[in-house]
Image (cartoon, rainbow, N blue to C red; front, top):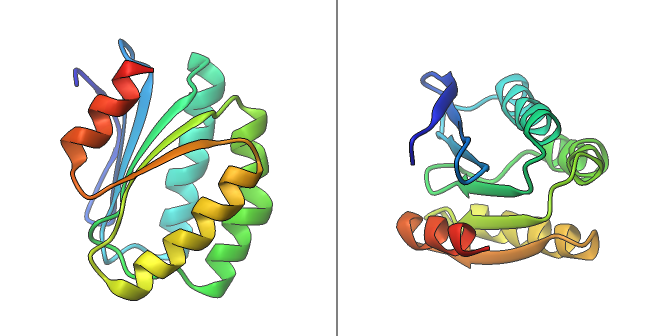
Length: 133
């Protein structure tokens, strides 16, 4: 991807590819609630400003989100992302078992809001799926 780097630090990476209109984030194990929320809301801004619909989440390195973050994601961020035009989600699942269980909760709630989802263990395959849409 020929991307525009939005956030790149020890907690997370957020970039946008203007050609494919794919928002891509990578979260690291060190991410805290404030940074997580900043990354996700910056992604919502990208959805709006670029009329993007595709999001690639590389969550391989994270642990399960806290109950507070899970609630915020489902009740605050998800409605904002859907309203901004989000339609397709390629999720690269974490290695940690409990984090995978946590991701299952998101898959279920996001699907119920109309997001088309594919789950991957390989980042390249996830990106290829989004590019075909």
